[in-house]
Length: 430
Image 1 (cartoon, rainbow, N blue to C red):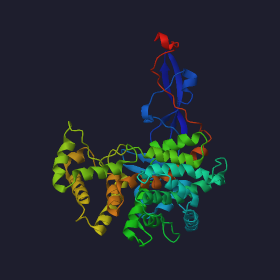
Image 2 (cartoon, one colour):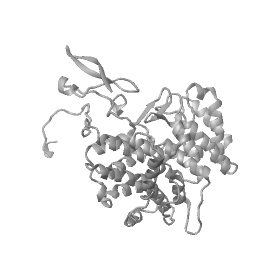
Image 3 (cartoon, rainbow, N blue to C red):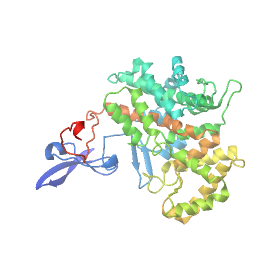
Image 4 (cartoon, rainbow, N blue to C red):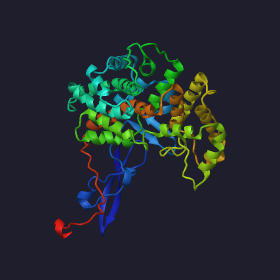
């Protein structure tokens, strides 16, 4: 970041010079840190869509170009040629690991996949019909009660231990939340399995019968994890940073991120996509819904098409489509009306000029929802799986914030439009 220019702001005949920083990628940034102290005014930016909240070296998004980079590496290259735990290492430490470094990192994660046995009692305290996300928020937040030796954020080693623990244990917690919700016994992790395969086994194995996922399914699960690992300063990541700015312990910060991710406007997009496919129901009803999507007076919208950030195409979608095709070829769609609707809807959307002109291409949520549904996951598990994926991004951002000398406790300002000062009136006189 370099400070090479200034911007001039005029307020009531007074001029103020504001530094302008040039990042390594993306638009220039006007520094308004001292604006209130110098000029006595705030800026107003609902949703912070034009405000930089931090300096970061982790992830860069160019929505106009359809570009997503982790530490400079394009996401499509990482999804095709790498795997989730290697991407975790990259996000956490800034560089791709050597073979020895990766082996050591994978061993450390694998050896921390089990959770404290007493934490099983937390799961049993929830109603059986509790949403898995509600369970995850509670259990992850409770981790600070069991792992006291990794809650001191001033200790770099404790931060490291907490990071490894959460990356390792999050799949176990999500799988246990799922098992609990369907009334099946918990399945313990196995150290001889890779990250994605281990998660699938913990979700679908039962004591009466072993579950051995096809490598195609394991690879698709790993890609889902990889493609959702981090996405810059989104709502949940900003929540983790804001919670962390107060000095909260790492488990509380990640629990806050999970709670934010649960919002349907953020982490529920692939669930909304599947619910839309269920609503359509059968292939013969697709023309009706296409017509509704084109009707400006109809509130119906096709879920899983287009993206708020990516204005041309979602760079994660192409790789996810390949996995979706592989999974559907493996499992078949002949007896699954939902997947038949998805395939036909995708075909129409890619050929119809209406969608092409508006750049409403299928996004990563469309394809990941199809894959998870084909694997046998209920829609209630889609967002917990997203949380498993995003944990490493949250942790990397949290650690970066703690190491930033310019970081301070988050304290957004407001544009107050309520009543001015007035005196209390006794209840008998109102």
